[in-house]
Image (tube, rainbow, N blue to C red; front, side, top):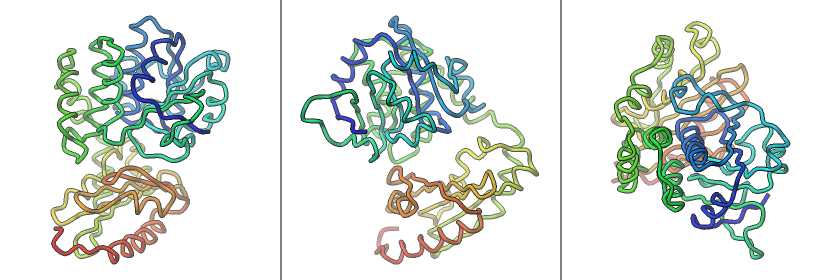
Amino acid sequence: MEVAVGDLKEIADIIENGERFLLTCHVKPDGDALGSMLGLGLALEDAGREVRYYAQDPVPKGLSFLPGSSQVQDHFDPDYASDAVLVILDCNEPSRIGDMAETLLELAKRVVVLDHHLGENLHCNQRKKNGLGKCCGYVSVEACSTAEIIVDLLDCLNWSMSVNSATCLYTGLITDTGSFRHSNTDKKAFLTASKLLDAGVDNYFVANKIYQSCPRERLELLGLVLKTLEIHEHGLFAMIHVTPKMFDVTGATEEDTNDFVGYARCIDTVELAAFVKEVRAGHVSVSLRSKKFINCVEIAQKFGGGGHFHAAGFRTPGTAHEIREVLLNKVHEYFEQLDISGRI
C-alpha cells in the first residue's frame, strides 16, 4: 500500500476533522510506541473525539503505569474500524503492526502514519501526484522519537496537553533517547522534554517506574546472560545471548531482557554490541547497538531487518547458538570492509 507524505499541517487537518480514531502501534510495544499512542489518544479524548486503542501484544508490566494503558485491547471492532481514522504510531511497515495489519488497512476509511524510523513497505518517501489519497504519513528520521512528533502535532493543532497525555509522551521521549544518552538526543529533544515538564510531568515518578522498578527475576536472568559474553574484532564487537532454558531456570519473561544489549555496549573498547535472544525454541531476535561509526542498519539488513544507524535489529529462525555464529561471520566481513584507523 502506498502512503503519501504530507507535512505536519496536513496531518493536523486530518486529525482536526476526524471524529472516530483507532490508534495502533508495532508488535511488542515499547515506551515510545505506547507513550505516543496513549499520549495522542488522551489528547484526542480531551478534544472530544472517540478513541480506541489496539495492539497485538499486551502492555508490558513495566509500562502499565502509563495513563490509559488499561484501555489498550488486543482486538478491535471491524464496524468501528471501518468508520475510523486509523493512526499507526512508531512504525511504517504493515508487518510490524502484526497479524491483523492488512485487515486494519483495508477497513479504515483514512490512514495516518506517524513515525521516526526509515521504512520501505508503506513507501512513505514519495507524495502521490493526485493528492494525499486514503493514506498519509509523516515520517521524520531527524526526530528523536515518535513522541516528539506527537508533541509537534499537538502544537500544530494548538491543543493543550493534560498531565496524563504529557506523562505518556515523556515516557516515549526518555526511553527512545536512553534518558538523553543516545546519539539521537539533540537540542530539540531537550526542548520537547521542557514542554512536557511544563505540562506537569513528574520526572522522578516516570524515571523511578522505568529504571528503578524491576523484578528479581530480571537480575537473575541478567547474571546468566552476562556469562555468555564474548569479545571479538580486537575488542570492538561484544555479543551476549539468552536461551529458552535460561528463561525456564529464572522464571523471567522476554520483557525482562529490555536493554540487556546495553551491558555489552558499555564496555570501553566496544563499538558494536549484539544481543541474540531466543525466547521460544527456534525463534531468534537480535538487537544491535553501536557507539560511533558502525552502521547497525547495514548489518541488520543482511538478515532482512532494519532500524537506525546506532540501533537496529532483525528476526530469524534458528537457535541462539546458530545465529551467534552466523552473525559473527557477517560482522567479521563488515569490519574487514571498514577503514577503522583513526576512528577510535
